[in-house]
Length: 237
Ligand SMILES: *[C@@H]1O[C@H](CO)[C@@H](O)[C@H](O)[C@H]1NC(C)=O
Ligand SMILES: *[C@@H]1O[C@H](CO)[C@@H](O)[C@H](O)[C@H]1NC(C)=O
Ligand SMILES: *[C@@H]1O[C@H](CO)[C@@H](O)[C@H](O)[C@H]1NC(C)=O
Image 1 (cartoon, protein in one colour):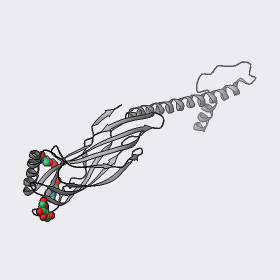
Image 2 (cartoon, helix red, strand yellow):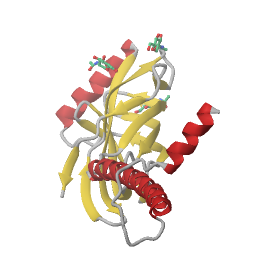
Image 3 (tube, protein in one colour):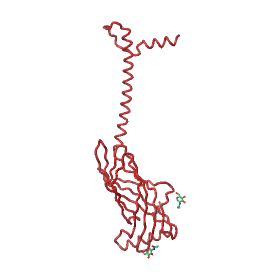
Image 4 (cartoon, protein in one colour):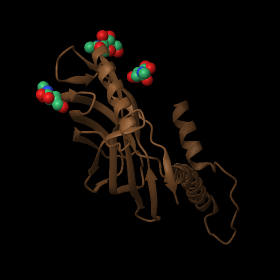
Protein backbone atom coordinates (compact mmCIF):
# COMPACT_ATOMS: atom_id res chain seq x y z
CA UNK A 1 0.00 0.00 0.00
CA UNK A 2 1.18 3.43 -0.88
CA UNK A 3 0.41 5.20 2.38
CA UNK A 4 2.00 2.36 4.35
CA UNK A 5 5.26 2.65 2.38
CA UNK A 6 5.39 6.40 2.90
CA UNK A 7 4.90 5.97 6.60
CA UNK A 8 7.67 3.39 6.81
CA UNK A 9 10.04 5.59 4.86
CA UNK A 10 9.45 8.66 6.94
CA UNK A 11 10.04 6.63 10.07
CA UNK A 12 13.48 5.52 8.92
CA UNK A 13 14.49 8.77 7.22
CA UNK A 14 16.15 11.38 9.35
CA UNK A 15 13.79 14.32 9.77
CA UNK A 16 16.63 16.65 10.61
CA UNK A 17 20.22 16.69 9.44
CA UNK A 18 22.40 14.67 11.80
CA UNK A 19 26.15 14.28 11.84
CA UNK A 20 27.29 10.96 10.45
CA UNK A 21 29.60 9.04 12.75
CA UNK A 22 31.81 6.52 10.76
CA UNK A 23 33.06 4.70 13.89
CA UNK A 24 29.66 3.09 14.40
CA UNK A 25 29.40 -0.31 12.65
CA UNK A 26 25.84 0.01 11.39
CA UNK A 27 25.55 3.58 10.18
CA UNK A 28 22.00 3.29 8.81
CA UNK A 29 20.55 1.98 12.04
CA UNK A 30 22.46 4.41 14.27
CA UNK A 31 21.39 7.35 12.11
CA UNK A 32 17.77 6.35 12.48
CA UNK A 33 18.09 6.09 16.26
CA UNK A 34 20.03 9.37 16.49
CA UNK A 35 17.48 11.18 14.35
CA UNK A 36 14.61 9.94 16.48
CA UNK A 37 16.54 11.02 19.54
CA UNK A 38 17.12 14.44 17.96
CA UNK A 39 13.42 14.84 17.17
CA UNK A 40 12.63 14.04 20.77
CA UNK A 41 15.27 16.49 21.95
CA UNK A 42 13.91 19.25 19.74
CA UNK A 43 10.41 18.56 20.99
CA UNK A 44 11.61 18.63 24.59
CA UNK A 45 13.42 21.87 23.91
CA UNK A 46 10.26 23.42 22.51
CA UNK A 47 8.20 22.24 25.49
CA UNK A 48 10.81 23.66 27.85
CA UNK A 49 10.75 27.00 26.01
CA UNK A 50 6.96 27.04 26.17
CA UNK A 51 6.95 26.26 29.90
CA UNK A 52 9.61 28.91 30.48
CA UNK A 53 7.44 31.44 28.62
CA UNK A 54 4.42 30.60 30.76
CA UNK A 55 6.49 30.82 33.95
CA UNK A 56 7.86 34.22 32.88
CA UNK A 57 4.34 35.48 32.18
CA UNK A 58 3.18 34.24 35.57
CA UNK A 59 6.13 35.95 37.26
CA UNK A 60 5.29 39.24 35.56
CA UNK A 61 1.65 38.88 36.63
CA UNK A 62 2.74 38.11 40.20
CA UNK A 63 5.17 41.02 40.28
CA UNK A 64 2.46 43.47 39.21
CA UNK A 65 0.04 42.08 41.78
CA UNK A 66 2.79 42.40 44.40
CA UNK A 67 2.09 46.11 44.54
CA UNK A 68 -0.42 46.05 47.39
CA UNK A 69 -3.90 47.00 46.29
CA UNK A 70 -6.06 48.90 48.79
CA UNK A 71 -8.83 46.91 50.37
CA UNK A 72 -12.29 47.06 48.82
CA UNK A 73 -15.34 48.07 50.78
CA UNK A 74 -18.94 47.76 49.72
CA UNK A 75 -21.80 49.11 51.76
CA UNK A 76 -24.69 46.63 51.83
CA UNK A 77 -27.22 48.34 54.05
CA UNK A 78 -27.73 51.13 56.53
CA UNK A 79 -30.66 51.45 58.89
CA UNK A 80 -31.45 54.10 61.43
CA UNK A 81 -33.76 53.53 64.35
CA UNK A 82 -34.91 55.18 67.57
CA UNK A 83 -34.42 58.58 66.06
CA UNK A 84 -35.21 61.62 68.06
CA UNK A 85 -33.96 64.90 66.69
CA UNK A 86 -34.64 68.11 68.49
CA UNK A 87 -32.89 71.46 68.29
CA UNK A 88 -30.72 70.48 71.24
CA UNK A 89 -30.14 66.78 70.84
CA UNK A 90 -29.82 63.96 68.36
CA UNK A 91 -30.49 60.41 69.44
CA UNK A 92 -30.33 57.55 66.96
CA UNK A 93 -29.05 54.02 66.39
CA UNK A 94 -27.26 53.19 63.17
CA UNK A 95 -26.99 49.63 61.93
CA UNK A 96 -24.52 49.37 59.08
CA UNK A 97 -23.58 46.25 57.08
CA UNK A 98 -20.65 46.19 54.69
CA UNK A 99 -18.31 43.80 52.97
CA UNK A 100 -14.58 44.27 53.28
CA UNK A 101 -12.38 42.50 50.75
CA UNK A 102 -8.70 41.85 50.22
CA UNK A 103 -8.21 42.07 46.44
CA UNK A 104 -4.57 40.92 46.64
CA UNK A 105 -3.32 37.61 45.28
CA UNK A 106 -0.10 37.52 47.27
CA UNK A 107 -0.61 39.67 50.39
CA UNK A 108 -2.51 38.93 53.54
CA UNK A 109 -3.90 42.04 55.24
CA UNK A 110 -3.61 42.27 59.01
CA UNK A 111 -5.89 44.98 60.31
CA UNK A 112 -4.30 46.28 63.47
CA UNK A 113 -6.89 48.92 64.08
CA UNK A 114 -9.97 50.36 62.42
CA UNK A 115 -11.56 53.50 63.79
CA UNK A 116 -14.56 54.96 62.11
CA UNK A 117 -17.17 57.62 62.37
CA UNK A 118 -20.59 58.40 61.07
CA UNK A 119 -21.04 62.00 60.18
CA UNK A 120 -23.32 64.60 58.81
CA UNK A 121 -21.36 66.84 56.43
CA UNK A 122 -18.08 67.30 58.32
CA UNK A 123 -19.60 66.82 61.75
CA UNK A 124 -18.97 63.48 63.41
CA UNK A 125 -22.09 62.17 65.13
CA UNK A 126 -20.46 59.13 66.70
CA UNK A 127 -17.32 57.04 66.45
CA UNK A 128 -16.77 53.29 66.55
CA UNK A 129 -13.88 50.87 66.30
CA UNK A 130 -13.45 47.32 65.05
CA UNK A 131 -11.41 44.53 66.62
CA UNK A 132 -8.23 43.45 64.81
CA UNK A 133 -8.68 40.80 62.15
CA UNK A 134 -6.91 39.23 59.18
CA UNK A 135 -8.02 38.91 55.59
CA UNK A 136 -6.35 36.15 53.58
CA UNK A 137 -5.65 36.19 49.86
CA UNK A 138 -8.75 37.28 47.96
CA UNK A 139 -10.78 36.83 51.13
CA UNK A 140 -13.79 38.93 51.98
CA UNK A 141 -15.77 39.34 55.13
CA UNK A 142 -19.20 40.70 55.97
CA UNK A 143 -19.24 43.09 58.87
CA UNK A 144 -21.95 44.74 60.83
CA UNK A 145 -21.55 47.71 63.12
CA UNK A 146 -24.08 49.24 65.43
CA UNK A 147 -23.46 52.82 66.33
CA UNK A 148 -25.38 54.70 68.96
CA UNK A 149 -25.59 58.42 68.60
CA UNK A 150 -26.47 60.31 71.72
CA UNK A 151 -25.76 63.98 71.36
CA UNK A 152 -23.28 65.31 68.88
CA UNK A 153 -19.50 65.25 68.97
CA UNK A 154 -19.29 68.97 68.64
CA UNK A 155 -18.24 71.39 71.35
CA UNK A 156 -19.18 74.67 69.78
CA UNK A 157 -22.84 75.38 70.70
CA UNK A 158 -23.43 77.54 67.63
CA UNK A 159 -22.27 74.83 65.23
CA UNK A 160 -24.14 72.18 67.16
CA UNK A 161 -27.37 74.10 67.01
CA UNK A 162 -27.01 74.81 63.29
CA UNK A 163 -26.24 71.16 62.48
CA UNK A 164 -29.11 69.83 64.58
CA UNK A 165 -31.49 72.33 63.07
CA UNK A 166 -30.39 71.27 59.57
CA UNK A 167 -30.77 67.54 60.24
CA UNK A 168 -34.14 68.16 61.82
CA UNK A 169 -35.37 70.13 58.82
CA UNK A 170 -34.05 67.64 56.26
CA UNK A 171 -35.57 64.75 58.12
CA UNK A 172 -38.94 66.48 57.96
CA UNK A 173 -38.36 66.87 54.23
CA UNK A 174 -37.84 63.12 53.98
CA UNK A 175 -34.10 62.47 53.62
CA UNK A 176 -30.74 63.24 55.26
CA UNK A 177 -27.32 62.46 53.82
CA UNK A 178 -24.85 60.81 56.16
CA UNK A 179 -21.29 59.60 55.59
CA UNK A 180 -19.40 56.64 56.94
CA UNK A 181 -15.66 56.99 57.25
CA UNK A 182 -12.88 54.74 58.54
CA UNK A 183 -9.21 54.90 59.31
CA UNK A 184 -7.70 51.47 58.85
CA UNK A 185 -4.17 50.83 60.03
CA UNK A 186 -3.02 47.64 58.40
CA UNK A 187 0.00 45.56 57.54
CA UNK A 188 0.37 43.78 54.24
CA UNK A 189 2.22 40.50 54.63
CA UNK A 190 3.59 38.51 51.78
CA UNK A 191 5.08 35.12 52.65
CA UNK A 192 8.30 35.62 50.71
CA UNK A 193 8.44 39.38 50.35
CA UNK A 194 8.06 40.93 53.78
CA UNK A 195 5.69 43.40 55.35
CA UNK A 196 4.40 46.82 54.56
CA UNK A 197 2.43 49.18 56.79
CA UNK A 198 -0.38 51.22 55.35
CA UNK A 199 -3.06 53.59 56.51
CA UNK A 200 -6.22 53.59 54.47
CA UNK A 201 -9.20 55.89 54.67
CA UNK A 202 -12.36 54.20 53.35
CA UNK A 203 -15.17 56.66 52.70
CA UNK A 204 -18.81 55.91 51.96
CA UNK A 205 -20.13 59.36 51.21
CA UNK A 206 -23.56 60.80 50.47
CA UNK A 207 -25.61 58.01 51.98
CA UNK A 208 -29.08 59.33 51.50
CA UNK A 209 -31.21 58.02 54.34
CA UNK A 210 -34.92 58.29 53.63
CA UNK A 211 -37.56 58.78 56.34
CA UNK A 212 -41.28 58.40 56.45
CA UNK A 213 -43.05 61.21 58.29
CA UNK A 214 -43.34 60.81 62.06
CA UNK A 215 -41.68 57.39 62.07
CA UNK A 216 -38.63 56.76 64.23
CA UNK A 217 -36.61 54.92 61.59
CA UNK A 218 -35.04 55.49 58.23
CA UNK A 219 -32.95 53.59 55.72
CA UNK A 220 -30.49 54.04 52.95
CA UNK A 221 -32.04 52.96 49.66
CA UNK A 222 -29.90 50.07 48.46
CA UNK A 223 -32.17 48.96 45.63
CA UNK A 224 -29.28 49.84 43.31
CA UNK A 225 -27.19 47.09 44.98
CA UNK A 226 -24.18 47.44 47.30
CA UNK A 227 -22.30 50.70 47.00
CA UNK A 228 -18.56 50.68 46.40
CA UNK A 229 -16.79 53.10 48.74
CA UNK A 230 -13.63 55.01 47.91
CA UNK A 231 -10.48 53.80 49.69
CA UNK A 232 -7.62 56.32 49.52
CA UNK A 233 -4.22 55.18 50.84
CA UNK A 234 -2.84 57.71 53.30
CA UNK A 235 0.47 56.14 54.26
CA UNK A 236 2.18 53.71 51.98
CA UNK A 237 5.70 52.77 53.06
C1 LIG B 1 -37.18 63.10 72.22
O1 LIG B 1 -36.31 63.83 73.03
C2 LIG B 1 -36.93 64.79 73.84
C3 LIG B 1 -35.88 65.52 74.64
O2 LIG B 1 -34.68 65.63 73.94
C4 LIG B 1 -37.95 64.14 74.77
O3 LIG B 1 -38.63 65.11 75.50
C5 LIG B 1 -38.94 63.32 73.97
O4 LIG B 1 -39.78 62.58 74.83
C6 LIG B 1 -38.19 62.35 73.05
N1 LIG B 1 -39.15 61.67 72.22
C7 LIG B 1 -39.16 60.34 72.10
C8 LIG B 1 -40.21 59.79 71.18
O5 LIG B 1 -38.38 59.61 72.69
C1 LIG C 1 -27.34 63.32 48.96
O1 LIG C 1 -26.83 62.13 48.35
C2 LIG C 1 -27.32 61.89 47.04
C3 LIG C 1 -26.72 60.59 46.57
O2 LIG C 1 -26.95 59.58 47.49
C4 LIG C 1 -26.96 63.03 46.13
O3 LIG C 1 -27.51 62.80 44.86
C5 LIG C 1 -27.47 64.34 46.71
O4 LIG C 1 -27.01 65.41 45.93
C6 LIG C 1 -26.99 64.52 48.13
N1 LIG C 1 -27.59 65.72 48.69
C7 LIG C 1 -26.86 66.64 49.33
C8 LIG C 1 -27.61 67.79 49.88
O5 LIG C 1 -25.66 66.57 49.43
C1 LIG D 1 -34.91 53.49 45.67
O1 LIG D 1 -34.19 53.82 44.50
C2 LIG D 1 -34.79 53.34 43.30
C3 LIG D 1 -33.86 53.71 42.17
O2 LIG D 1 -32.56 53.32 42.43
C4 LIG D 1 -36.16 53.94 43.13
O3 LIG D 1 -36.76 53.44 41.97
C5 LIG D 1 -37.02 53.63 44.35
O4 LIG D 1 -38.26 54.31 44.24
C6 LIG D 1 -36.32 54.07 45.62
N1 LIG D 1 -37.09 53.66 46.78
C7 LIG D 1 -37.34 54.49 47.78
C8 LIG D 1 -38.15 53.93 48.91
O5 LIG D 1 -36.95 55.65 47.80
